[in-house]
Image (cartoon, rainbow, N blue to C red; front, top):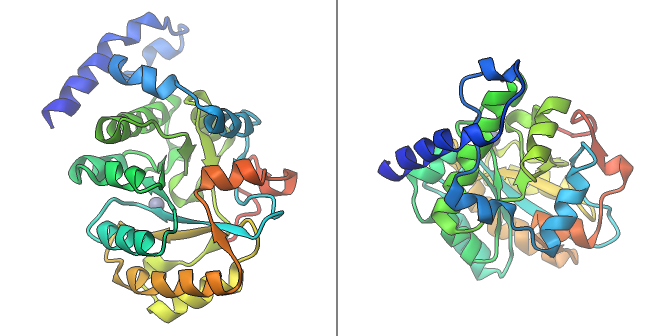
Length: 273
Ligand SMILES: [Zn+2]
């Protein structure tokens, strides 16, 4: 907790470097990535540059191009009490996934993001407190993203390059906020609605009935009891492998199989929920 307070104070202190326009001056605090974290947040590797390049088109993607029989498993709202079980299953099956984490849960579960990344998974930003970003001012949108980026960097030493809006609620201003922070906005195509806690077999069947090459599949490792998702995951992986599918993080999937114009949108349209 002490670290976070220090981080917030540094963010406040460095804000003056970026002279805001007169109108924005009335906003509370526009956080910046902390001095210590900013180098990391601004360092873009080759894959990062490609992801950010796609995001720079002002769009959200909801799937990859479909040229390769590869899918991306994604887990939102963690880390939480079921995250370790999900990581263990992924490791046993040598499958990578992408975790869209909530900043306050990163803070409450230290070491989990570091473990996710160390295991070969990718981590994305899912706001600090699961906010509907479309209802927030630009300053608050910025704070949701930067505070979560800081929490991820503090935990793992690695910056995120992905953003997923809670509820899939995006607008041009939300996408612009992600873009400003060098993040690609990622939605999904295959939705299991596992957060409603259907039984494990139903979750498996929803994945298998919606999957196609390039699908980004939405599940949850936090936000409530995810025992049924944990129970479904080994079968999901086994059945997809049996059908010849490979698995990649969202970043690797998108870079190796770029989305076409019909795989992205400016307002989330086209996302099946
Ligand atoms: Zn969520």
